[in-house]
Image 1 (spheres, rainbow, N blue to C red):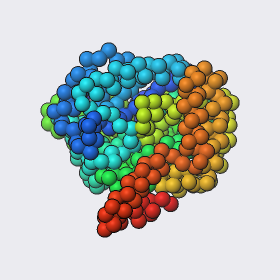
Image 2 (cartoon, one colour):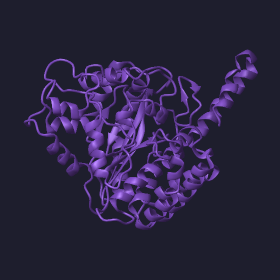
Image 3 (cartoon, one colour):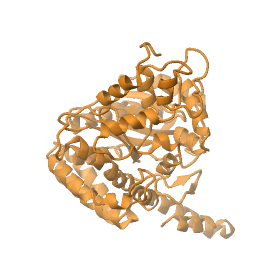
Image 4 (spheres, rainbow, N blue to C red):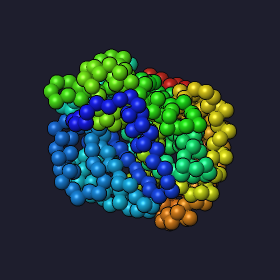
Length: 438
Protein backbone atom coordinates (compact mmCIF):
# COMPACT_ATOMS: atom_id res chain seq x y z
CA UNK A 1 0.00 0.00 0.00
CA UNK A 2 1.13 3.63 -0.45
CA UNK A 3 3.84 4.78 1.93
CA UNK A 4 5.34 7.94 0.41
CA UNK A 5 3.91 11.42 0.99
CA UNK A 6 1.96 12.98 -1.87
CA UNK A 7 4.05 14.58 -4.63
CA UNK A 8 3.47 17.39 -7.08
CA UNK A 9 2.40 16.95 -10.68
CA UNK A 10 5.85 18.03 -11.89
CA UNK A 11 7.57 15.53 -9.58
CA UNK A 12 5.37 12.70 -10.77
CA UNK A 13 5.94 13.63 -14.41
CA UNK A 14 9.71 13.64 -13.78
CA UNK A 15 9.34 10.21 -12.15
CA UNK A 16 7.66 8.90 -15.31
CA UNK A 17 10.41 10.36 -17.46
CA UNK A 18 12.95 8.47 -15.38
CA UNK A 19 11.33 5.04 -15.34
CA UNK A 20 9.45 4.61 -18.63
CA UNK A 21 12.38 4.33 -21.09
CA UNK A 22 15.67 3.15 -19.59
CA UNK A 23 18.16 3.47 -22.40
CA UNK A 24 21.41 1.68 -23.11
CA UNK A 25 22.68 -1.24 -25.17
CA UNK A 26 19.91 -3.79 -25.81
CA UNK A 27 21.09 -6.69 -23.70
CA UNK A 28 18.04 -8.33 -22.13
CA UNK A 29 15.01 -10.21 -23.36
CA UNK A 30 11.96 -11.51 -21.53
CA UNK A 31 8.64 -13.19 -22.20
CA UNK A 32 5.28 -13.56 -20.47
CA UNK A 33 3.17 -16.49 -21.64
CA UNK A 34 -0.47 -17.19 -20.87
CA UNK A 35 -2.52 -20.35 -21.36
CA UNK A 36 -6.20 -21.12 -21.04
CA UNK A 37 -6.66 -23.82 -18.39
CA UNK A 38 -9.16 -26.56 -19.22
CA UNK A 39 -10.24 -30.01 -18.15
CA UNK A 40 -7.76 -32.43 -19.72
CA UNK A 41 -10.50 -34.87 -20.77
CA UNK A 42 -12.95 -32.33 -22.17
CA UNK A 43 -11.84 -28.76 -22.95
CA UNK A 44 -15.46 -27.74 -23.42
CA UNK A 45 -16.20 -28.54 -19.79
CA UNK A 46 -15.46 -25.47 -17.58
CA UNK A 47 -13.03 -26.05 -14.73
CA UNK A 48 -14.51 -25.51 -11.29
CA UNK A 49 -12.97 -22.67 -9.24
CA UNK A 50 -11.97 -25.05 -6.45
CA UNK A 51 -9.86 -27.10 -8.87
CA UNK A 52 -8.12 -23.97 -10.15
CA UNK A 53 -7.40 -22.69 -6.65
CA UNK A 54 -6.01 -26.09 -5.70
CA UNK A 55 -3.83 -26.13 -8.83
CA UNK A 56 -2.53 -22.64 -8.10
CA UNK A 57 -1.59 -23.64 -4.56
CA UNK A 58 0.27 -26.74 -5.77
CA UNK A 59 2.09 -25.04 -8.66
CA UNK A 60 3.43 -22.35 -6.33
CA UNK A 61 5.34 -25.05 -4.47
CA UNK A 62 7.37 -25.92 -7.57
CA UNK A 63 10.97 -24.60 -7.82
CA UNK A 64 10.27 -22.26 -10.74
CA UNK A 65 12.52 -19.48 -12.01
CA UNK A 66 9.65 -17.63 -13.69
CA UNK A 67 6.90 -15.85 -11.78
CA UNK A 68 3.71 -17.91 -11.87
CA UNK A 69 0.35 -16.14 -11.60
CA UNK A 70 -3.28 -16.72 -12.52
CA UNK A 71 -5.43 -14.21 -14.40
CA UNK A 72 -9.05 -13.45 -13.37
CA UNK A 73 -10.55 -16.15 -15.58
CA UNK A 74 -8.07 -18.77 -14.42
CA UNK A 75 -5.54 -18.30 -17.23
CA UNK A 76 -2.11 -19.47 -16.14
CA UNK A 77 0.78 -17.06 -16.74
CA UNK A 78 4.54 -17.56 -16.56
CA UNK A 79 6.68 -14.40 -16.57
CA UNK A 80 10.38 -14.95 -17.16
CA UNK A 81 13.13 -13.05 -15.45
CA UNK A 82 15.09 -10.71 -17.75
CA UNK A 83 17.60 -12.88 -19.61
CA UNK A 84 20.90 -11.85 -21.16
CA UNK A 85 20.28 -13.82 -24.35
CA UNK A 86 17.47 -15.36 -26.35
CA UNK A 87 18.85 -18.82 -25.60
CA UNK A 88 18.96 -18.22 -21.85
CA UNK A 89 15.37 -16.93 -21.89
CA UNK A 90 14.09 -19.94 -23.80
CA UNK A 91 15.97 -22.45 -21.67
CA UNK A 92 14.74 -20.91 -18.42
CA UNK A 93 11.06 -20.86 -19.41
CA UNK A 94 11.23 -24.28 -21.04
CA UNK A 95 12.66 -25.73 -17.81
CA UNK A 96 9.78 -24.22 -15.84
CA UNK A 97 7.23 -25.59 -18.31
CA UNK A 98 8.79 -29.03 -17.93
CA UNK A 99 7.69 -28.84 -14.29
CA UNK A 100 4.34 -27.12 -14.75
CA UNK A 101 2.81 -29.22 -17.53
CA UNK A 102 3.20 -32.64 -15.83
CA UNK A 103 1.92 -31.18 -12.57
CA UNK A 104 -1.15 -29.87 -14.37
CA UNK A 105 -1.73 -33.20 -16.13
CA UNK A 106 -1.51 -35.01 -12.79
CA UNK A 107 -4.38 -32.80 -11.59
CA UNK A 108 -6.44 -33.57 -14.71
CA UNK A 109 -5.88 -30.11 -16.21
CA UNK A 110 -4.62 -29.04 -19.62
CA UNK A 111 -3.08 -25.81 -20.94
CA UNK A 112 -4.33 -24.55 -24.31
CA UNK A 113 -2.71 -21.89 -26.48
CA UNK A 114 -5.55 -19.77 -27.87
CA UNK A 115 -5.67 -15.99 -27.97
CA UNK A 116 -9.33 -16.08 -26.96
CA UNK A 117 -11.31 -18.85 -25.26
CA UNK A 118 -13.03 -20.72 -28.11
CA UNK A 119 -15.34 -22.70 -25.83
CA UNK A 120 -16.79 -20.71 -22.94
CA UNK A 121 -18.20 -17.26 -22.16
CA UNK A 122 -16.12 -15.18 -19.72
CA UNK A 123 -16.36 -16.17 -16.07
CA UNK A 124 -14.23 -14.65 -13.31
CA UNK A 125 -12.67 -17.23 -11.02
CA UNK A 126 -10.54 -14.93 -8.85
CA UNK A 127 -13.38 -13.20 -7.02
CA UNK A 128 -11.61 -12.08 -3.85
CA UNK A 129 -8.97 -9.78 -5.42
CA UNK A 130 -9.86 -6.08 -4.99
CA UNK A 131 -7.87 -5.13 -8.12
CA UNK A 132 -9.91 -7.42 -10.33
CA UNK A 133 -13.19 -6.39 -8.71
CA UNK A 134 -12.38 -2.72 -9.40
CA UNK A 135 -11.23 -3.59 -12.93
CA UNK A 136 -14.44 -5.47 -13.66
CA UNK A 137 -16.59 -2.62 -12.37
CA UNK A 138 -14.59 -0.12 -14.40
CA UNK A 139 -14.73 -2.02 -17.69
CA UNK A 140 -18.41 -2.85 -17.28
CA UNK A 141 -19.04 0.82 -18.12
CA UNK A 142 -17.78 0.02 -21.63
CA UNK A 143 -19.85 -3.11 -22.20
CA UNK A 144 -18.96 -6.78 -22.14
CA UNK A 145 -15.50 -6.57 -23.73
CA UNK A 146 -13.84 -5.91 -20.39
CA UNK A 147 -14.95 -9.20 -18.85
CA UNK A 148 -13.94 -11.02 -22.02
CA UNK A 149 -10.47 -9.41 -21.88
CA UNK A 150 -10.02 -10.30 -18.22
CA UNK A 151 -11.32 -13.86 -18.32
CA UNK A 152 -11.11 -15.17 -21.90
CA UNK A 153 -7.87 -13.90 -23.47
CA UNK A 154 -4.29 -15.17 -23.47
CA UNK A 155 -1.12 -13.88 -25.10
CA UNK A 156 2.62 -14.15 -25.66
CA UNK A 157 4.09 -10.87 -24.47
CA UNK A 158 7.67 -10.19 -25.55
CA UNK A 159 9.80 -7.68 -23.63
CA UNK A 160 12.80 -5.97 -25.25
CA UNK A 161 15.11 -3.23 -24.01
CA UNK A 162 14.23 0.35 -24.91
CA UNK A 163 17.48 0.82 -26.83
CA UNK A 164 20.13 3.52 -27.08
CA UNK A 165 19.39 7.15 -26.33
CA UNK A 166 21.14 8.11 -29.56
CA UNK A 167 19.57 7.67 -33.03
CA UNK A 168 20.37 4.57 -35.04
CA UNK A 169 19.06 1.07 -35.75
CA UNK A 170 18.89 0.29 -32.03
CA UNK A 171 17.93 3.79 -30.91
CA UNK A 172 14.94 4.47 -28.66
CA UNK A 173 13.01 6.66 -31.11
CA UNK A 174 13.27 4.17 -33.94
CA UNK A 175 12.41 1.16 -31.73
CA UNK A 176 9.36 2.97 -30.33
CA UNK A 177 8.03 3.77 -33.81
CA UNK A 178 8.92 0.35 -35.19
CA UNK A 179 7.18 -1.44 -32.32
CA UNK A 180 3.83 0.08 -33.32
CA UNK A 181 4.22 -0.72 -37.03
CA UNK A 182 5.89 -4.09 -36.67
CA UNK A 183 3.31 -4.79 -33.98
CA UNK A 184 0.60 -4.98 -36.65
CA UNK A 185 2.72 -7.48 -38.62
CA UNK A 186 3.27 -9.64 -35.53
CA UNK A 187 -0.42 -9.39 -34.67
CA UNK A 188 -1.32 -10.67 -38.16
CA UNK A 189 1.35 -13.37 -38.42
CA UNK A 190 0.52 -14.92 -35.05
CA UNK A 191 -3.26 -14.35 -35.10
CA UNK A 192 -4.73 -17.35 -33.29
CA UNK A 193 -8.21 -16.58 -31.99
CA UNK A 194 -10.91 -16.79 -34.69
CA UNK A 195 -13.67 -18.29 -32.54
CA UNK A 196 -15.75 -17.61 -29.46
CA UNK A 197 -18.19 -19.99 -27.76
CA UNK A 198 -17.74 -22.48 -30.58
CA UNK A 199 -18.42 -20.14 -33.49
CA UNK A 200 -16.18 -18.07 -35.78
CA UNK A 201 -16.26 -14.36 -35.04
CA UNK A 202 -15.23 -13.03 -38.45
CA UNK A 203 -11.78 -12.05 -37.17
CA UNK A 204 -8.45 -13.87 -37.18
CA UNK A 205 -7.61 -12.40 -33.77
CA UNK A 206 -10.70 -11.95 -31.65
CA UNK A 207 -8.42 -11.18 -28.74
CA UNK A 208 -7.21 -7.98 -30.41
CA UNK A 209 -10.80 -7.03 -31.27
CA UNK A 210 -11.68 -7.30 -27.59
CA UNK A 211 -8.78 -5.03 -26.62
CA UNK A 212 -9.77 -2.45 -29.25
CA UNK A 213 -13.28 -2.21 -27.76
CA UNK A 214 -12.08 -1.15 -24.32
CA UNK A 215 -11.58 2.29 -22.80
CA UNK A 216 -9.48 4.19 -25.38
CA UNK A 217 -7.87 6.29 -22.64
CA UNK A 218 -5.91 3.26 -21.44
CA UNK A 219 -5.78 0.84 -24.39
CA UNK A 220 -4.87 3.00 -27.41
CA UNK A 221 -1.27 3.85 -28.19
CA UNK A 222 -0.12 7.34 -27.20
CA UNK A 223 0.41 9.76 -30.12
CA UNK A 224 3.68 9.26 -31.98
CA UNK A 225 6.12 11.97 -30.97
CA UNK A 226 9.73 12.99 -31.40
CA UNK A 227 9.85 12.80 -27.59
CA UNK A 228 8.38 9.43 -26.51
CA UNK A 229 8.99 10.19 -22.83
CA UNK A 230 6.92 13.38 -22.85
CA UNK A 231 4.14 11.74 -24.89
CA UNK A 232 3.99 8.78 -22.52
CA UNK A 233 3.97 10.98 -19.41
CA UNK A 234 1.02 12.97 -20.78
CA UNK A 235 -0.76 9.74 -21.69
CA UNK A 236 -0.32 8.31 -18.19
CA UNK A 237 -1.42 11.41 -16.32
CA UNK A 238 -4.44 11.96 -18.57
CA UNK A 239 -5.61 8.33 -18.37
CA UNK A 240 -8.63 7.59 -16.16
CA UNK A 241 -7.92 6.06 -12.78
CA UNK A 242 -9.12 2.47 -12.47
CA UNK A 243 -8.20 1.71 -8.86
CA UNK A 244 -7.77 3.71 -5.67
CA UNK A 245 -6.13 1.25 -3.28
CA UNK A 246 -7.55 1.17 0.23
CA UNK A 247 -6.81 -0.81 3.38
CA UNK A 248 -10.50 -1.56 3.76
CA UNK A 249 -13.34 -1.51 1.28
CA UNK A 250 -13.49 -1.65 -2.53
CA UNK A 251 -10.82 -0.11 -4.73
CA UNK A 252 -13.29 1.50 -7.14
CA UNK A 253 -12.30 4.95 -8.44
CA UNK A 254 -14.65 7.90 -9.04
CA UNK A 255 -15.92 7.83 -12.60
CA UNK A 256 -14.06 10.16 -14.98
CA UNK A 257 -11.18 10.85 -12.58
CA UNK A 258 -7.85 11.11 -14.44
CA UNK A 259 -4.59 10.76 -12.59
CA UNK A 260 -3.85 14.42 -13.32
CA UNK A 261 -7.19 15.37 -11.74
CA UNK A 262 -6.38 13.20 -8.76
CA UNK A 263 -3.07 14.98 -8.24
CA UNK A 264 -4.62 18.43 -8.58
CA UNK A 265 -7.62 17.83 -6.33
CA UNK A 266 -6.11 15.44 -3.78
CA UNK A 267 -9.41 13.55 -3.67
CA UNK A 268 -10.48 10.94 -2.67
CA UNK A 269 -7.08 11.07 -0.94
CA UNK A 270 -3.74 12.55 -2.03
CA UNK A 271 -2.01 10.21 -4.51
CA UNK A 272 1.55 9.01 -4.10
CA UNK A 273 4.37 7.84 -6.34
CA UNK A 274 3.35 4.27 -5.56
CA UNK A 275 -0.17 5.09 -6.73
CA UNK A 276 1.29 6.35 -10.00
CA UNK A 277 3.34 3.18 -10.49
CA UNK A 278 0.24 1.10 -9.81
CA UNK A 279 -1.79 3.25 -12.21
CA UNK A 280 0.74 2.49 -14.98
CA UNK A 281 0.15 -1.24 -14.38
CA UNK A 282 -3.53 -0.70 -15.26
CA UNK A 283 -2.77 0.84 -18.67
CA UNK A 284 -2.85 -1.57 -21.61
CA UNK A 285 -1.68 0.00 -24.89
CA UNK A 286 -0.28 -2.35 -27.57
CA UNK A 287 3.26 -1.37 -26.52
CA UNK A 288 3.79 -0.40 -22.89
CA UNK A 289 7.06 1.15 -21.71
CA UNK A 290 8.10 -0.09 -18.28
CA UNK A 291 11.77 0.82 -18.58
CA UNK A 292 11.80 -1.77 -21.36
CA UNK A 293 9.17 -2.19 -24.09
CA UNK A 294 6.35 -4.70 -23.58
CA UNK A 295 4.89 -5.87 -26.89
CA UNK A 296 1.37 -6.96 -26.03
CA UNK A 297 -0.23 -7.76 -29.39
CA UNK A 298 0.65 -11.44 -29.95
CA UNK A 299 -1.98 -14.14 -29.41
CA UNK A 300 -1.14 -17.21 -27.33
CA UNK A 301 0.21 -20.00 -29.52
CA UNK A 302 -0.61 -23.71 -29.61
CA UNK A 303 1.80 -26.50 -28.72
CA UNK A 304 4.46 -26.97 -26.09
CA UNK A 305 6.91 -24.64 -27.86
CA UNK A 306 4.60 -22.43 -29.88
CA UNK A 307 5.59 -19.43 -27.79
CA UNK A 308 9.23 -19.74 -28.86
CA UNK A 309 8.66 -18.59 -32.46
CA UNK A 310 7.18 -15.14 -31.68
CA UNK A 311 9.81 -14.64 -29.00
CA UNK A 312 12.65 -15.55 -31.36
CA UNK A 313 11.36 -13.49 -34.30
CA UNK A 314 10.77 -10.42 -32.16
CA UNK A 315 14.15 -10.68 -30.45
CA UNK A 316 15.93 -11.02 -33.80
CA UNK A 317 14.19 -8.01 -35.35
CA UNK A 318 14.83 -5.76 -32.37
CA UNK A 319 18.24 -6.79 -31.11
CA UNK A 320 20.29 -7.75 -34.16
CA UNK A 321 21.61 -4.53 -35.73
CA UNK A 322 21.30 -5.66 -39.35
CA UNK A 323 17.85 -7.19 -38.88
CA UNK A 324 16.61 -4.14 -36.96
CA UNK A 325 17.68 -1.86 -39.80
CA UNK A 326 15.97 -4.08 -42.37
CA UNK A 327 12.81 -4.41 -40.29
CA UNK A 328 12.55 -0.66 -39.83
CA UNK A 329 12.84 -0.07 -43.57
CA UNK A 330 10.26 -2.80 -44.23
CA UNK A 331 7.61 -1.50 -41.84
CA UNK A 332 8.15 2.25 -42.15
CA UNK A 333 5.93 2.49 -45.30
CA UNK A 334 3.10 0.92 -43.28
CA UNK A 335 2.76 4.25 -41.50
CA UNK A 336 0.91 5.57 -44.55
CA UNK A 337 -1.74 2.87 -44.18
CA UNK A 338 -1.92 3.39 -40.43
CA UNK A 339 -2.60 7.10 -40.85
CA UNK A 340 -2.97 9.43 -37.91
CA UNK A 341 -5.21 7.26 -35.74
CA UNK A 342 -3.51 5.39 -32.89
CA UNK A 343 -3.08 1.63 -32.78
CA UNK A 344 -5.04 -0.59 -32.58
CA UNK A 345 -7.89 1.52 -34.00
CA UNK A 346 -6.23 2.50 -37.26
CA UNK A 347 -6.66 0.86 -40.70
CA UNK A 348 -3.35 -1.03 -40.54
CA UNK A 349 -4.23 -2.79 -37.31
CA UNK A 350 -7.80 -3.40 -38.41
CA UNK A 351 -6.51 -5.18 -41.52
CA UNK A 352 -4.29 -7.29 -39.25
CA UNK A 353 -7.17 -8.17 -36.95
CA UNK A 354 -9.63 -9.22 -39.63
CA UNK A 355 -7.62 -10.48 -42.59
CA UNK A 356 -4.20 -11.12 -41.00
CA UNK A 357 -1.79 -12.19 -43.73
CA UNK A 358 -4.49 -12.34 -46.40
CA UNK A 359 -3.88 -8.58 -46.56
CA UNK A 360 -1.26 -8.14 -49.34
CA UNK A 361 0.63 -5.33 -47.62
CA UNK A 362 0.91 -7.16 -44.31
CA UNK A 363 1.81 -10.39 -46.09
CA UNK A 364 4.68 -8.76 -47.99
CA UNK A 365 5.97 -7.13 -44.81
CA UNK A 366 5.75 -10.39 -42.86
CA UNK A 367 7.63 -12.37 -45.53
CA UNK A 368 10.44 -9.80 -45.55
CA UNK A 369 10.58 -9.49 -41.74
CA UNK A 370 10.63 -13.24 -41.16
CA UNK A 371 13.42 -13.58 -43.72
CA UNK A 372 15.43 -10.95 -41.86
CA UNK A 373 14.77 -12.72 -38.55
CA UNK A 374 15.85 -16.08 -39.94
CA UNK A 375 19.14 -14.62 -41.13
CA UNK A 376 19.71 -12.92 -37.76
CA UNK A 377 19.01 -15.86 -35.45
CA UNK A 378 22.36 -17.61 -35.99
CA UNK A 379 24.10 -14.31 -35.23
CA UNK A 380 22.20 -14.18 -31.92
CA UNK A 381 23.40 -17.68 -31.08
CA UNK A 382 19.95 -19.27 -31.39
CA UNK A 383 19.88 -23.06 -31.02
CA UNK A 384 19.33 -25.14 -34.18
CA UNK A 385 15.90 -26.27 -32.97
CA UNK A 386 14.81 -22.64 -32.52
CA UNK A 387 16.01 -21.75 -36.03
CA UNK A 388 14.17 -24.81 -37.35
CA UNK A 389 10.95 -23.85 -35.53
CA UNK A 390 11.00 -20.37 -37.07
CA UNK A 391 11.69 -21.82 -40.52
CA UNK A 392 8.82 -24.30 -40.15
CA UNK A 393 6.39 -21.56 -39.06
CA UNK A 394 7.52 -19.38 -41.95
CA UNK A 395 6.96 -22.12 -44.51
CA UNK A 396 3.68 -23.34 -43.02
CA UNK A 397 2.06 -19.97 -42.47
CA UNK A 398 3.88 -16.78 -43.50
CA UNK A 399 5.00 -17.84 -46.97
CA UNK A 400 1.45 -18.98 -47.75
CA UNK A 401 -0.30 -15.88 -46.46
CA UNK A 402 -1.79 -17.82 -43.57
CA UNK A 403 -1.75 -17.60 -39.78
CA UNK A 404 -2.60 -20.14 -37.05
CA UNK A 405 -6.20 -18.90 -37.01
CA UNK A 406 -6.66 -20.23 -40.55
CA UNK A 407 -5.98 -23.77 -39.38
CA UNK A 408 -8.71 -23.37 -36.76
CA UNK A 409 -11.13 -22.03 -39.34
CA UNK A 410 -10.36 -24.93 -41.67
CA UNK A 411 -11.03 -27.39 -38.85
CA UNK A 412 -14.31 -25.69 -37.96
CA UNK A 413 -15.37 -25.68 -41.59
CA UNK A 414 -14.53 -29.36 -42.00
CA UNK A 415 -16.39 -30.30 -38.83
CA UNK A 416 -19.45 -28.35 -39.84
CA UNK A 417 -19.40 -29.74 -43.36
CA UNK A 418 -19.34 -33.24 -41.91
CA UNK A 419 -22.18 -32.38 -39.54
CA UNK A 420 -24.16 -30.79 -42.36
CA UNK A 421 -23.72 -33.91 -44.46
CA UNK A 422 -25.05 -36.04 -41.62
CA UNK A 423 -27.74 -33.54 -40.59
CA UNK A 424 -28.41 -31.14 -43.48
CA UNK A 425 -30.76 -28.93 -41.44
CA UNK A 426 -27.94 -28.10 -39.02
CA UNK A 427 -25.40 -26.94 -41.63
CA UNK A 428 -26.07 -23.20 -41.64
CA UNK A 429 -22.80 -22.37 -39.83
CA UNK A 430 -20.90 -23.13 -43.05
CA UNK A 431 -22.28 -19.88 -44.45
CA UNK A 432 -21.04 -18.06 -41.34
CA UNK A 433 -17.60 -19.60 -41.79
CA UNK A 434 -17.53 -18.32 -45.35
CA UNK A 435 -18.32 -14.82 -44.14
CA UNK A 436 -15.54 -15.09 -41.57
CA UNK A 437 -12.98 -15.20 -44.38
CA UNK A 438 -12.41 -11.73 -45.88
